[in-house]
Length: 426
Image (cartoon, rainbow, N blue to C red):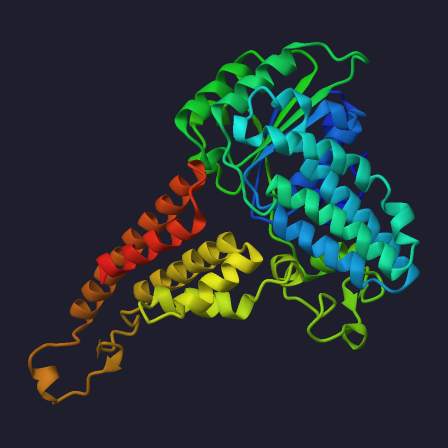
């Protein structure tokens, strides 16, 4: 019933299987866990269990599909062996198909007028991607022409720009869910990123799931369940997704590039071309980020330097972020660097009681020692003070990024605002 999920999230798979067997899947589910942990895959498994067609599944998500689709495109164009071509074609078709579930006709009324053109383009892209099996068996020039058409449609639809969830979308869902489908099948609504939206969106959703429409299942996907209103959490059945182990990561990669990755957790580095998306990654996030053409080392280095309030190559960074549409990747890396700094600061006071000033040990008998500098208490207080400042800065940065996403703000302006926050805290 939930094929593949048992290889990455066995506990979740077993629970869903049991509920499905007893016909007791609740009307509202919560899939909580880190990115790249099969949460969306599990949601679509639920849809397949109900035999819900593409017209019976709607996704509202603020994720950046651009990175995933670019990786899928690059995999497709790089594939040489028959098994890789077949796997990459299926992955590209499924990824674009998942993205297009955000453009169901039911959401057209709730879309901003500026996005109406995207819905028209989505219909054309659906027809185009249906021909991928033919394109995959064609020559290099035909494949390239096919991909150019796909990329043109995606450009019109702004796939690289995450869209904030709006209250109008939630209201459109309510209207759609209240109507009975022609074939009487279950309707599936997947909402991802509810924790990043406005209270009005959460309240609108709460009113729906308080009295859920018949034959409709709501699945909320989140990385931080603690930021979702308790009134919504109390009305959902919760499933916790864990980060992938190396073996689980390899299982997923083996389905994407079987000539390099072997199921069961053993990979063949000798068959991975250095610098290509076949090169062995440490996790799925690295695979998809690097595979989409993002200059990850440059982004990570500038995120690290900014977190330390060191000078960054603003011109070079903006050029990369604009070219690869990777502002989201940078902001994630920056927040991760701040979290690491926070943990380092909390560990600043040596557990053994050794003394230090600015990270340098204070030797007994020195002037600094006689003044009492570097005492265990002083070091602990200084470390806690620094940790508190970093924590406040990280919170301001996270709030600024979240507000900008909710307002669909120009990401370059968001970056400038974030850099200003560091200057303000220096």
